[in-house]
Length: 302
Image (cartoon, rainbow, N blue to C red):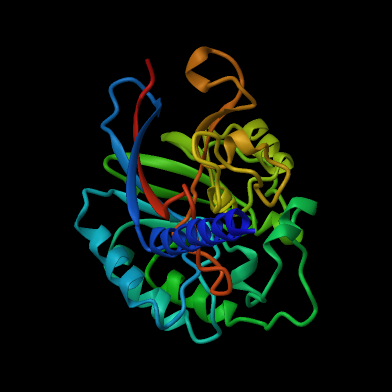
C-alpha cells in the first residue's frame, strides 16, 4: 500500500513537471534558419521569413513583442501561412505584431482560424483523424484582417497567383485558401512570371492533394503550416499527429516532395512545414516542439 502510494505521488510529480514544462515551452519562441537551393546559378540569396499559426489573442503581449523584433533580422520578404487569429478582437493585435514587417514585400493565405474561432476540444480526438468545423464556432473578422494585410502591400494568395520582387529576384507565387476546411481551389495553370527566379506555392494545411497540385504546377518550394509540428511530441521520436493526411515524419521542417528534390534533375519540390508560433487558447501547451518562425535563405542550385 505504501509502495503504491509513493508511486502515485511520484507519477503525479512527473505529470505536474511535464505540464509546467509544456506551458513554458509554448512561450519559448524560436527563430530557425535553413537554406533552400532553388534559385538559378549566379542569383543573390533571398531571405524569406515564413510565419504561421500565430493564433493571437489581445492578451499575448510577449508574442507580439517577439514578432515585432523579427523586423531587426535581415529579411527580404515575408510569407504567412494562416491561422493568425484566436479571438474575435485580435485583428488589431495581429496588425500591431506584423506592423514592422509590413514594410517588406509579403504575401498571405488564410487558415480555418482566420474564419472561425477556436473551441475547447479533447486533444485525444486528433488521433481519430483531422479535426472538423463545428456549427457553434464563432465567425471571426476575416475581411478586416484581409484589408489590414492588403493595406500593407502584401499579396492575397487565397486561390490566387501573384509575385514578389525581393533582393533582386522575382518570385512567382501560387496559393490556395485553407484546404483543411475545403476552401482550396487551385488557380488555373499559368506561364511563369517573366524573369521569375522560382515559383513558390503557399497553403495553410499541407494536404497531399495540395502538395501534389503545386508540385505539378511547377513550384520549386511549397510553404505550409497547420500541423503545429505535432504540438505535443515524443522526445527523440517526433510528432504523433499532423491534423491532416501528411505523414508525421514531415510534420515540420524542410523535406522533398514527393521525395525528389528539384536540384536532383527530377520532378518534385521542397516543402517547408512550419511548426508555427501559437496554440489554441484552450490548449496552451507544447512539448518537445517549440513554437517557431523560420528564415529560409533561397540560394542558387548546385
